[in-house]
Length: 273
Image 1 (cartoon, rainbow, N blue to C red):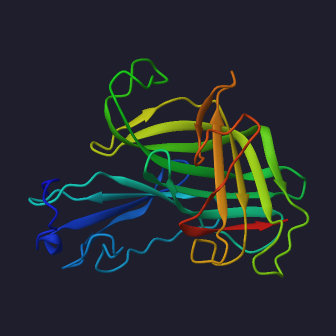
Image 2 (cartoon, helix red, strand yellow):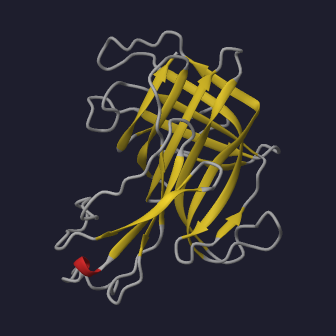
């Protein structure tokens, strides 16, 4: 579709979306699902597929869903990646998934995480955060040399180790009130970063030994801005030399000791000490 043309036209019903699910380790889960776009769909309604896709997912690490508009003679769209988390009820864990508006980039970010404390006191689980960013040529160095080609990317921050990190959950969490009170969780470790081209689908490594920290607050159900007080999420990524690689915030850049959180636009977070 011509970017200057604000009309969707009447050919949406001839196009298809393909959904592919990947496990946290990168392996494909099940068979990709292809769906026709709803005839007469309106932009921004959220109605994109005629019927839902079905995948069998297990509780545990977050999954990545890749969404592609298949080639057609009328419309083009960049590939999208989103995070999905499946969790079980219990205690001694924090889990969540959803999306929020990234105020500094003017884009949408997705996240998913599932972190729990085992009986021996160690921490198990993983975290995934995806944000969108456009870069110019020769501005982002690759881990194996050279630079990231200019273009639009989905940036993926994926945990890969608990080295130097761990998890803390506020023992004073009260889930009998509405909104909840003091249901706060923090976890940290090491992460790798990848940039996935929204045009070609190519994946580029940007390094694998970054420090990350995630801070969340569970304010009750349903968790998003539909609630009286939405759940909140924050993430910071930095190098061993101390330089901040990425941080989610709104307004004035935070100091090194500040870890702000932003309200969810969709999704839910649970903190269960």
